[in-house]
Each structure stands twice: as structure tokens, then as C-alpha cells.
Length: 232
Image (tube, rainbow, N blue to C red):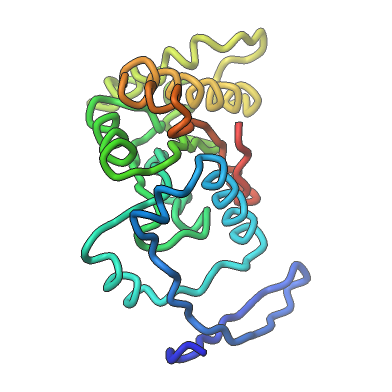
């Protein structure tokens, strides 16, 4: 049994009924270097999918963060590097039910890569041993919508220029504006795929690691309505 005080949580059903239950915070085991080395890219993908399922169903792991902080002071051996949009509605660690020391997270509006983010990914994988890179986009992305509409505003203009090529590459005969959710979705998916290709093109280190099977580089889209991540 955990020596830590139980927490009371309140759950609301689809019918609006409120129920309560007690949960005990867990001291989740922090990976060692050896355990991280024994992971495979596929096992990490499986772990993220299982964590996302818990997030969607409201069965998130109760963690003792104080204990996890102490256990990660001397080093870190995360499973994955996740590149997400900066959007505040996408709490990356929670989305995959991960805690302190589990994943590296990089964030920028529109989840594209630049030199700094590529360097961070190389650090996460080549230096620190992560087995997976996940490019995580999301529905209703403001940056993608702005790129679709070719918004011009201060430094946002330069930022959106990184996303515009993905928008322009979408083959679509209908309304190509942010008012069309179907086109925005296609642009979001195109942007994720372009980011993946940019990683492979602009980082020989990560491309070589992927070719050797040491890592995988994949994409996913977060559904704002359900919390579910659809892996591409």
C-alpha cells in the first residue's frame, strides 16, 4: 500500500450524475538507462496508445509527483520526443497519461520544425536514448487556420510561412478557407506529414537512426471533441 493520503475525485456521468471515489497516488517507476535501452519504437507507440485510451475514458494514473521529482534528479531516460502545437487545450503529458521523466515535449504553434527543434530532437534521441518521435497536430488548429487564410501579422507572418507549403500542397477543389472544416483537417494532416519529411530531410542523424530501426518518426492528430489521438 502507498503511504500517501488518498485523494477523493468527483466524476460526472453523461446524464449529469455526480459520483465520488478515492484513489491512492502511485509512485510510478522511473525508467533506468538499461530499461530505456530495452524499449522498442513499437512498444513506445503501444504505451502512448494505451495512455491515450486511459485519458479518453477518464482512468488517468494518480501519480505522486513529489516522489517522481526526487527519482529523476540524477538523470532522465524518456521514452519519446513529442512535438506539439502550443495550443493550451492540448495537455501533452495528460493526453498520453505520462508523468515526470516520461517524455520530451517541444511546442510551437503549428507543430513545425526548425533548427532549434531539430537539435532538441537529436538530443532526445541520439544523446538521451528516446525511441520515438511523434509529431502531434490537432483539430481546429488556429495556426493552421491562419496559414490557410494566409494571415499577415508581425512575426506571425514568418511563422506561418513554415506551414503554408503544406496548405498549398493539398489537392482540393472545394472552399479553401478556414471556414471549411474539411479543408482545415486536410491541411492539418498535410502539415504533420510535411513536418515528418522535414525531420528526415534536415536531420541526417535522425534519418539514419530511423533507417537502422533505432527510432520511428510518426504523426498523430488530437481530436478536441473526444481527446482521442488518431495515429497516421
